[in-house]
Length: 302
Ligand code: THU
Image (spheres, rainbow, N blue to C red):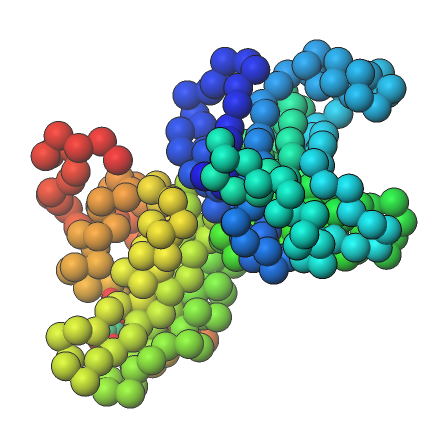
């Protein structure tokens, strides 16, 4: 278990799957730092809860967004990766890993900051968790240099789980550009038709994919399913949009890919589809796959 999510206030319905997502974020932070087998507690509180803690623990009587309480005291200028012995001492049998400490998040503040930045609450919670994770690993932002280092670590970790600085206010154009970037990695020595895709998940994360072919032609995987696989493996289950680009012609999604997209989105899903350097069309999944079989038809709610 990488994180243990604790609710001091009622858990919110729109935060389904949050522990899995924050676990992904925490593991990405550990990978970027270069440590393994660590975890920490994430406690959700409200304005009053964080104010009380801030007062008790730091003598500061004010509301804030996140507080971090590391279990390890790192020597000046050092972070978790260079203190393996100190970390090992904090092995916690309940967590099943080294307990780095506590991250306390003010859900009220997270909600207002998300609205202010124009991104989802989930996304804001991922930011706050990553920020706290680096504090728990010995990072700080007392001066500009430290701040820049910590920010870069956060961005690398969040980028690895599909959260980029600008994916919050995504446009079709930008999603299409990301698909074009993904297309560069296409493995298509048989058809020579490169395809790139980028899925925008409902929680604001983006996932890229490209086609990868096979000597046994039928084993080929399309760009859309590659992107979908990356999204699913990172815990995303609801797609908000997809862009697909072909290197020499418009890459209309094949039948299998249309059906795969239907599993994780409804028929209003915008499908931005085009050819490299030649612009794009915006269709809906319903236009590409009318009368489709959906998970709901088989009694499944995704
Ligand atoms: N391809 C995709 O990646 N997505 C589609 O929806 C259409 C087809 C790829 C598969 C194969 O590598 C190449 O394009 C030619 O069919």
